[in-house]
Amino acid sequence: MKTTLLIGASSAVAKEVAKALSAKNKRIISISRNEPNAPFTEFYEHTFNSETSFPKLEGVIDGLVYFPGTINLKPFRSLKENDFLNDFNINVLGAIKSIQTYAPNLQLSDKASIVLFSTVAVQTGMPFHSSIAVSKGAIEGLTRSLAAEFAPKIRVNCIAPSLTNTPLADRLLNSPEKMEASTNRHPLKKVGTPADLANMVEFLLSEKSQWISGQIMHVDGGMGSIKNA
Image (cartoon, rainbow, N blue to C red; front, side, top):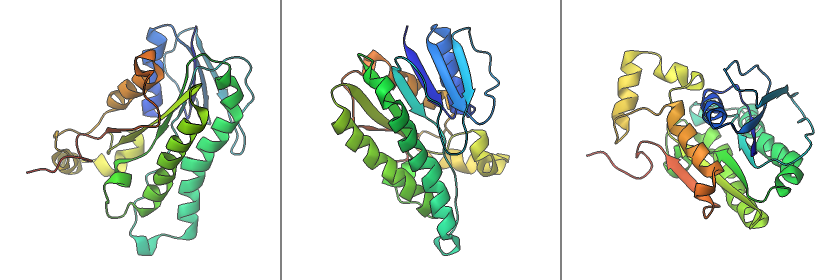
């Protein structure tokens, strides 16, 4: 039975991934500061982590997904050093610590996969995104570097979404006017959903993507590569 480790499992996207994997009777281990509060099967295990460390786990881990992230949108002139440090700690150092902790477990798998998250704002310059773009740009570099270092034993890929309708993005989508404006900014005229991202996570964890590594997968409604007429 394949085992997938979900870090930051109380996020909306993580819950969608867990439900999809549970439906296929996959074993799931989740780590988060908050209770995920979702209907999982008997193959689901949960543990809480502290601010500074991840719990040791025994046995094989076949997939690791790091979900924690931030949306810190401010004019560059208003950003303080602590803004950049906080975004970097959550998005980058947290991912690094988790991979360093569980790399020995992943090495025990025949076909392991790591999935990280970036943002469309790394490829497409957007105002007020400098802090988060700095952090997620580092994640994209980490993805490619680790994909090279861990090959052929462990695949490493990254998903770069546009704005997705999750609690983290609520203040950007919490009115009909904001939702309409965001919808119209995307060439596909749709704001992303947790299921849209979960589908890509599930694909990258599966053997269907066994010839894919070091890639940044843009699940962004076309925003990163298509210009609206």
